[in-house]
Length: 204
Image 1 (cartoon, one colour):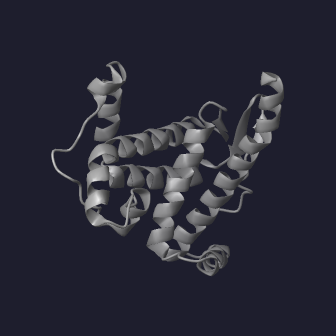
Image 2 (image 1 turned 120 degrees about the horizontal axis):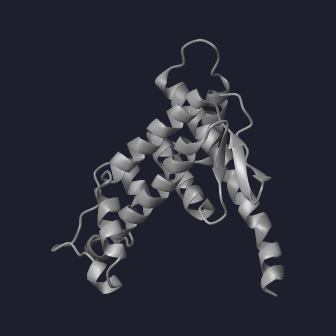
């Protein structure tokens, strides 16, 4: 994966060149995180609730919800309080919708990857969701790689740079994907932030 992995402005949106084989790897990673969140079921609940009154769409668990056992999923759905009972009760009110929101963002990213030919296109209206999805995937991979500090992250980037023509180990491949996602996320967020002054001027 040697491409720049940097979004650039193009025709009112942002694009990045990603080869089909590399997009296939990213699609697999997206699908794995969607599955980690509970698959497409949460997306279905959200779509059914979209046409109803917001209070009708609110779904509560009957009991407080315990934190996930998988530490990677817990990075996506962190405790809201150091108090276990408070956190479990908060999860009861929020976790289903949070899962659905994250799954919907991942679906936006997946659609952009799947629809691409030579370039992945992200329109401004979809950019916040796509950036959030990239962040969530990075969180999952960072947990799998044991990233806890800036030094750990630097070690991962060095590991990614070691990937060569030989068959990479699973850890090398995961590090390479993490580095790619970092570049994609940082470049997209940078372009979004660059648009803020212009948007303010236009509103003014």
